[in-house]
Image (tube, rainbow, N blue to C red):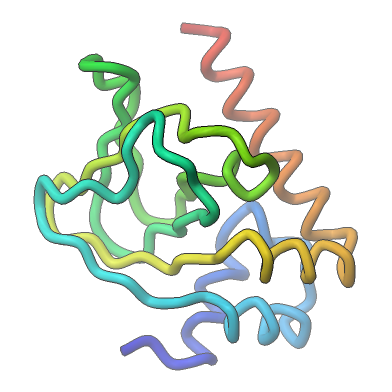
Length: 138
């Protein structure tokens, strides 16, 4: 079980939240639910409706578009962040490469935070922009 203090320190190390003061990250830590996945377990499936994002605490995940693996992500990366911003189906399947520990943040809770803290909205725009640049470079 990850303590609130450990969650705050972890969140501070992620681009999405790096510009947010520690005291404000305590609120994010409160809404972040710890979830563990086993190897080959699906974290999300392409085409399903999504309402949450996952921050990878430990382990690695593989991201698939159809049957093609497009990227492998690890510690301090986030997946599912697009579902936080819209109500569209998941754009990719994410599968645990081995044991994975995550923090899950639900859309409704995240919207409340973005209304309170503009820095969070700016952080997610930064992450999405970087992902778009990476995707278009492929």
